[in-house]
Image 1 (cartoon, rainbow, N blue to C red):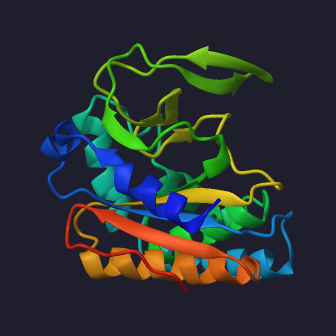
Image 2: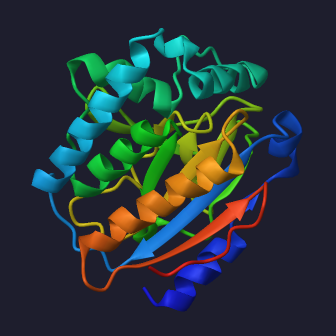
Length: 245
C-alpha cells in the first residue's frame, strides 16, 4: 500500500459526535502500518508477552482486575451505552483476566499488540487494513449494521444493539461494543502485511501516556521488516501528527 494511502485512510477516519457526547474524555490513536513481514508467533513476541505477563501480575498483587483504573473507567463506559461489563468485557480487562494462566499466543502481530496493550494498560485492537472497505468510523449503532462472527464454529452475521458503540467501515461493523469483539472479516492473520491499530483511552489515562503507547507500538512494528512504514492520527485530546520511524 503506498504511503499516501495510509495517510489518506487515517485522514478520513471519524469518531461521531454522539460518541464524544457519551464520553467527552475519549481519545483514540489510530496507527496505520504497511510493509510488515508476516509470520506466526516467534521468540520475539514470546519475550514481549512474558514481560507483559510479569508487569500485569505485579499490578494485580495490590488489587483485583476491576480495580485497575483504566479497566474501571471502561466498565463505566460500557454501562453508559447499556452493556453489562460483567458479561462483555473490554479488551484490556479480558487480557488482564488471562494473565494468571498466560496471555494468548496467536500470531506475530496479535501477540505484539496484546503485549503493548497490557504493558501500557490501554485497550488496543488490530485489523487487517487490506480487508477494510473505506475508512474506520466509531459511532452509535442503529442496530441494523452487519457484524460477522463465529458461533459454534460457523461464520454468522448478527447485529449490534441500538445505541451500542461500534467501529465499522463501508461493509459493516468491525468491532462491537467499542473494544469488545472484532469481526471475522478484518482479523489479523499470519499473512497480514498492512494493518490499522486502535488505541483507546479514557480518563485517568493522560494524552502523554496514550501517545507513549502508540509510539511504543510503532517502534515495535518497525522491527517487523525492512520496509515497514507507520503513520499515526489522534482523534480527541492534543494533536499527534503522522510519524515515520
